Length: 493
Image (cartoon, rainbow, N blue to C red; front, side, top):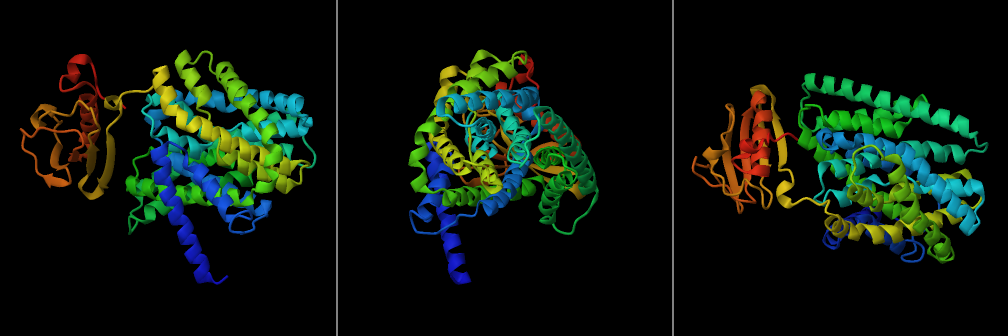
C-alpha cells in the first residue's frame, strides 16, 4: 500500500477514535472499549488487516505505557494525592500481592491452570490501569483523598507487577526470595532516580531561557523518558522512575506548565488510541469464545474477592471509612496494562500464553463494561461523591517571567459560592486584580460592583508573591461564600 493511502487510513482511524471519545464521554464508558472494538473491526475478522506479531506489540505497548504514565504524573497535583499516597503505596505493594494470590488460587483450583500460569495470570491482572482510571475518575466529583488514592495507585502499581511478570516469564524462574529481593531493589532504584531526575530537571528548566515556549514540553518529556532509560540500564524500575519524575516536574514552578500539560495529554491520547487499536488487531476473535468461561470465573474472582480483600488487608489503619473502602473495591479498573503484559508471556513463548491473552482480553472488556458506567451511581449510593460546589475551581497559569507576575484563568463551576459575589466583596490580596470577565462568550472589564455568575471565566493578574494568597482566597469563597473566613475556611488545596 502506498504511503498516501496509509496516511489517509491512519487519519480516518484517528478521527474515528476522537469521535469515539465523545461517545464514551456521553455514555460513561471508558473510551478504551471503543478503541478495542475499532481494532477488532479493522482486524482479520473485519476489514482483514492482519497483525500477529506479539513481540512488536509488546515493544509498542510498553512504549505507549511510558507516555501514558508520564501524562498521569504530569497532570497530577501533589496536593490532591498527598493524603492518599500511603494507602496507594500499600495497595500497590501489599494489595497487589493479595490480588495475585487470590486470582492464582482461583485459576489453579477452578479452571485447572498450572501453578506457574495461574500465578502469571494473577500478576497480569493485578495492576489497575492508569488510562482507564484517569479517564473515568476525573469526571467523577470525588473527594481529593479518594481520587488521589486511585490515581496514585494506578501510577505506582505498574512497576512491581511488570518486574514480577518479567521474572515469571523468564526461562528459569527465580525463587520467591530472589524475586522479592529484586523487586525491592528495582523499586528503590526507580524511585530514587525518578526523584533525582525530577529535581535536577526542574532546577535546570527554571534557570534556562529557551528561545521558544514549545521547547519546554519537549524538554520535560525528554527528561521523563530519559529517567526510564537510565533506570532500566542499571536494572531499576523504569516505570516507577517515569511516574515519579513526571510527578516532581509537574509540581515544580516550571515555565509554561499549561503548554507542557496540554502537550503531554495530546501524546497520551495518541498513545492510548494506538495502543488499544493495536491490541484489538492482535486479538483473534475466533479464539475468544473458548476462553469465555475461564475468563469469567477468574474475572469474578478478581472483582468480587481479590480486589475487596486486597483493599481490606492493605488499608486497615489508614483512616479510610468503610464507604471509601467499598468504593475502592469496585473502582479497580483494568485496561491496557494487563493486555500488554499478556503479550510479554506470548513473546517469551510461555506454554498456554495464547489462552492467557484471550482470557485477559475478555476480562478487561467484560469487567470494564460492567464497572465503568456504574461508578458514578455507586459513588452517589455510598455517599462518597461530593457536590459540584465542593469541586475545586480550575486554575490555569501562564507565567510572565520578566514581569515576575502570573496570569490566572479562573472558571467558576456550577453551584460555586462565588456565584452572586460582587468583585469588591472578594477582598483580593494586594498585588492581585480581576482584569477581565468572560460571560456567555462575551468579555468585559468588571467594575467593583460587578456580580459574578456560575460559568464565568475570570482573568486574574497577580504578582508572583500574591498568587498563592489569591488562589486560596478564591478557593475559600468558592467553598464557603464571602464569609468563608468566619467559618475558618482558608482555601488550602
